[in-house]
Image (tube, rainbow, N blue to C red; front, side, top):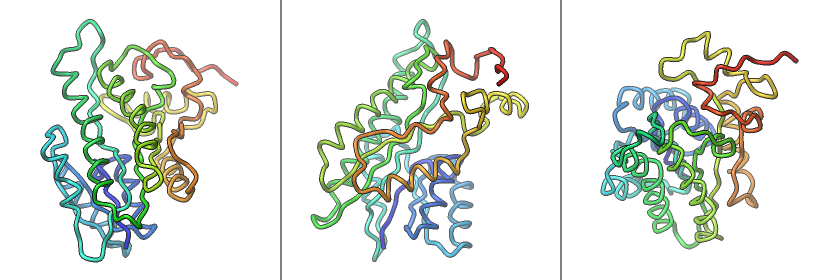
Length: 255
């Protein structure tokens, strides 16, 4: 049985991806750091649907814990062949006020941990097996603005690493990215504000977790796809926003 490790799988996008992988026949390792209750609920939902899963905890800001996580994803009869680097730190800062601590925290969770996990998967994969690494990125990499500076820098690094690891790990591992647009309500966003911003894109269609699941399934089902990123954002990256959508006060234009 093939196994998949999804980081940050107890909540939001990670949860949706974990449920989809389980439905597709993977044994899913549901990683969490602090969301223990939600991770266990995800495993319970997978089990109720006839799938198999297990929770695994690690603080991805710790290099040691990140290095050891793949080795802990061990179940008899299960071969770990899929890694979804979904967990992400997302803290607001801008160039005038960003600190070294902000930089280090974002790089540790959003870039260093995916590298260490990817290396561990590559080392543990049997010679006769192939696998897939999927990195969750952000549409703003294709539509830069100065908000969330150190978060954005870490995701720029992860995008570059997607290409480099695809080169390094071929032909045994494919490495690809998914860059979502605004998908779920976050932070202090009200339901009304989210509803407005969710469709503030060229297609006037909000991105859903189902869209991201379809992107993941495409990558897994397409053996020729590697080293590139699927932008799933209803064209949001085409808009050229001067600020992050959370702060962009421009009104939607009518069709």
